[in-house]
Length: 451
Image 1 (cartoon, rainbow, N blue to C red):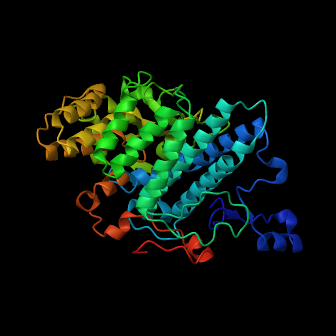
Image 2 (cartoon, rainbow, N blue to C red):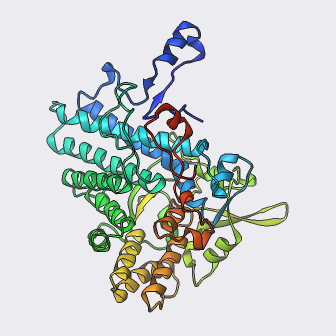
Image 3 (tube, helix red, strand yellow):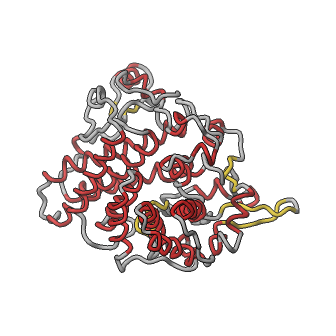
């Protein structure tokens, strides 16, 4: 584990060089991970920009491994090929409150929130001629968007969570903030997105937040809340933006230099700020650990010309000991290590709108949206005629389209189909456990039922 978890971002800073009384003092007086020392406070243009980039870095941290794993591994398309208990628990839908990935993801997410809170609290008070009003608004809008994204992810993973909206300055700041309901958590996401949309530029920067980025996440939020009209409206705004389009072939999405016209928001990595996700997918013969393997049913779907089409590019094969081995190829830049993390894509907006329209009885329009995604993949058009058949077709399309992204588990949870599809009938297991260390640190924090 990279960091000891303490409720709302506290870490102990004892090192081998400070053994003795100094180390004891450090342990007794933990320092907030995101607390900014006086000489590093947000006081001018440079520090405001750096602090905002720091929030992106915190979001990048949980999207690099932990969050995608929590999205695809509990589903039926990927298996864990190893012995590490933290991954096996996720694969087998048997999570415990001391699971390392759960603990680390929760910590990283609240670190990102605290970073956003620092920007939101400080930037309005920065008086620097090198930071014009338009840029100040942009930085604030980015912080609001990133806070919304993290709280949305927390909500769909854990249900209602503590809503911390001010910076953590001391060890007392975070205690006593009880969990909000899921509705209240999503209300906060909506409020942050509304604020972000007013502040952000109407531009196209695919690895930083813009107005379109907020609308795309808002469409997803309304989908999760079953607010079909609003989901359709926001998705339509993004689909109608001429700066975005579905790209062909499918592999263009995940081909350097990335940031394709389909990308609404992705997190950028580089060789010096590496994404090691490829290492978990590649076989040992190619320098990887082969921790995550597509199961035979997923391989068959992706390779089926009538289902996967060009999305078969998500798979690759190699020969090991004379046998052909198939592995996941979404993250493939093993030398450059600069695969992005995919957060919002235009294909999802089409499928959001398709589902929202189907729920409203707009079956012809819903089918057209579904077939736009299928056409890009080079597969035959769906002929689903009833609302039930169309919704199942959309669900199956999402399964293939986002096979190795943070999607499948959360899709089945929000539609209530986890029991039918995966056999996880205990609905208490549809939410992740609150990390054990956090419960110990803060008696006001309540565990999810079933853990």
